[in-house]
Length: 152
Image (cartoon, rainbow, N blue to C red; front, side):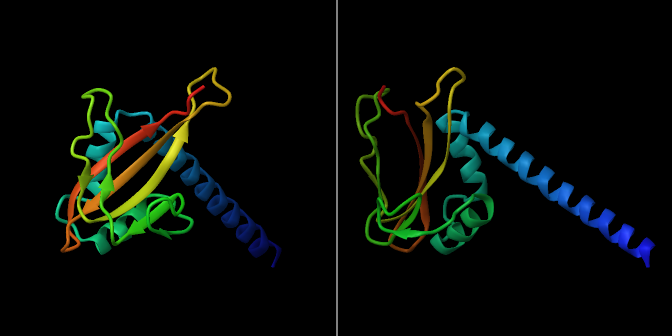
């Protein structure tokens, strides 16, 4: 009986260690992704959700690969949202001095992928957002990645 208890405890310890290690490496991978260029993040997102994928399939894939606590409805409805009435509205791109193009699609999914800080900065972080734009047939037509740095 005691041997069974020791084996059970050892097995639980191994399982707990495996879960902790998985969570650590997953978080580490996420932080590495966030620090990449917007173009590299977009390429990764397009591997997961290729152009033409349905909005429903994209929603499912996003939930499997990124942490989503709760889905909101409509732009500005939280860290993750689905909008069936509006496409993606891009921010001003200072590199090309324009919005290009100003709106993508007629439906959207948006997600804050996370944030990171540069070493030495205590307060100001960079937030990374992914936006999926869909057409009237609920098919993905583009992905837009943006990084937001608070003014300090």
